[in-house]
Length: 71
Image (cartoon, rainbow, N blue to C red; front, side, top):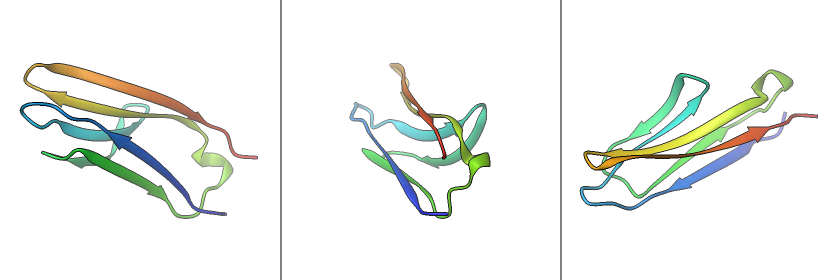
C-alpha cells in the first residue's frame, strides 16, 4: 500500500520519446524529455512484474527493465 517511484533518464539528438511499459502496455509517455518518472501511488501484489523504460528517436531505441517484487 505504499508508493513507489521509478525513474528513467536518457539524452539524445533529437531528444527521445521516453515511455514506461509494463509488459506491452504503455503506462506513461513523454516526448522530447530527458527524464520520466512513473509513480505507483499504492503498490499492491498485483503491481508486481516487469517494468521497462524505453528511449526512442529516429536513430534507434534503447531500453532498461526492472522486476518489481511486492511482499
